[in-house]
Image 1 (cartoon, rainbow, N blue to C red):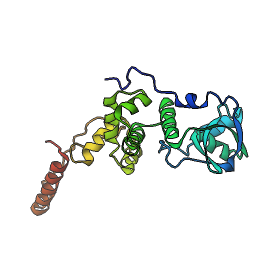
Image 2 (image 1 turned 30 degrees about the horizontal axis):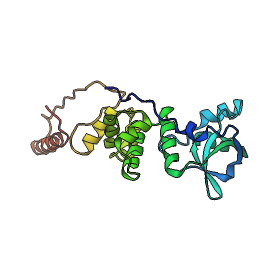
Image 3 (image 1 turned 135 degrees about the vertical axis):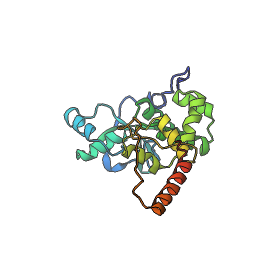
Length: 235
């Protein structure tokens, strides 16, 4: 089943910036990152952009919104962080007049369009929009260009905590919808463990317990059988 519906995702950034052809130049110390940015992993991994911007400069301005006497990044956080690492004093930016809620949707749509988010990060953002901003599945589907079914699927994997997702990454597993759903089932006691991606084939281990004292062997088998029941492992 394709996750995409028949509509293209809304280009909110173009809609709210089409009249602002000439970007402003803002001091970096006036700009702050958004703590509610949809992206969770890799926000500070900007060395590739540092190298690129050092050679070519800033190709595309960042997008910010005014918040009292400061500016909050809507799109282009990694470009902003790279500029900081390069020691720049200022950066070209487009200032949008869209409100905070629209800016959040902009950031989500832009990150997803660029494929900067993994399914869990998208799911967390969708869950936030549905729970906190009272968006319907249909409205979110229109925003991202997804089917309603896929939106609900991503919402469900948002129940996973940050540590579980990080552990998947740490053990070499890809953050796919399939792996996330398997991790969720395991966490909720409904499934089996996920094998590390670098060892996808099943391994059969044979233990010779004949030389172990009877009491030790019995205790081992009891604990082992309890583990098999807990994780749904079949013989």
